[in-house]
Length: 284
Image (tube, rainbow, N blue to C red):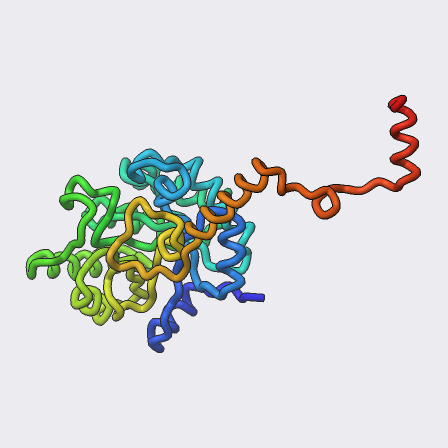
């Protein structure tokens, strides 16, 4: 049985250069297998918009969606640190909205922490307010999908000297605002290294190189389930999509040919005496 790690233990792991293992999950079964495997931290990401609901972006995802899926992941992984991803417009309007919705993740879904994107003055104010309400908050900088219009789309960030310096400054700003950890997405490895070397909180990377304190991947990418797009930074550890396709195809073929089900193997049985009685009652 896993023992759920705390933020103090993550800080200790970062200080001792022990890598933190971080994955997304959106449902009970996936979370259960991730906990069995020993994952340290699970993100219930707003990426469920694409992975679960088939939206083209994360923007349509609602708080109700996030609460429902985070609660399911908590049931599947009761002993794993769970981060709830705050969806679009759940925190941007005001500090009050941010605190209220962060509180819902904790009270209704059992999350240990919430995550939000951005690093400007308004976002730092949201981080500060959530932290002061007693809720752990993870910041998210670099490639931030909710700010895709401002950062030029879904592409790597920090690829010029000026842009890289800005990311280092953003990391310090959200840390100062009270972020307990920072997710850095889609930046060159050297930028991930310099952010991490200056940080006083754990830095988790997704497409940010090998120097961060831990690594995050979207589980559907790394097991080969989501094939609409395959990011450069993903390593495929399984081809579950191929396995599912083969299984579904075999099932279709066997049902159509009559090879499934075979009553001797796949059907419930009745005693000969009861079968005879049944047929007599039918008048057969």
